[in-house]
Length: 92
Figure 1: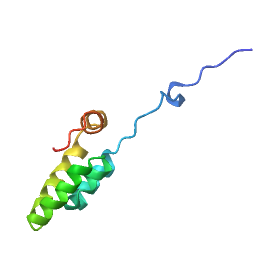
Figure 2 (figure 1 turned 30 degrees about the vertical axis):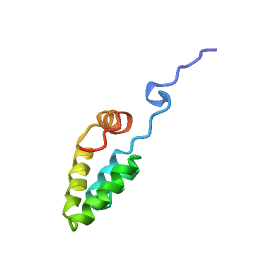
Figure 3 (figure 1 turned 180 degrees about the horizontal axis):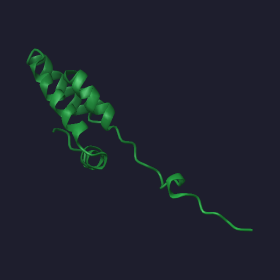
């Protein structure tokens, strides 16, 4: 009896780390002033600081979240994962 090997496209390559790029990017663009994208990535201090910046600047500071959201979405999945989830880069 001949044993067949599973096709490479159908073989799991191991546990894939969770990538939060799209969620963080979209929330950064839409709700950047509230720091939601920071909380999604696990940056609690940076998220609170983002809220304070937005309140103190009467919402003008929310442009930071908008810019970060665009940056998140333009990076490759691997680059985003290495930079923001493994390297824990808090800002830009």
